[in-house]
Image (cartoon, rainbow, N blue to C red):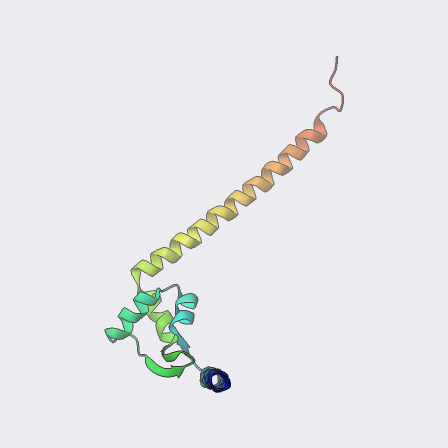
Length: 128
């Protein structure tokens, strides 16, 4: 049993060292994991895989904590995502939605001001 625990402990230390090595390699680098590239650019991981498989973006494999990990250059991914009509229309819809929300907030603010002005003009006790 003690031998099993030692192996587990050694495996965990090896994983941790790999994570630290990967973090050190990526520090200040433009190369990021597919997960981070997807989160930062709005491109799906499936799209990223398609892009590197067809040579539209470069990629490289590095040892990660749970096996090989694919990295892509974030600036190149961002440029490719910007050129994607689908991603551009998604971003435009999101911005349009945010703009509509801001307009509605402004309208609500205006209505609240008008309501407050009307309430100030009304006499406190209606005539009987």
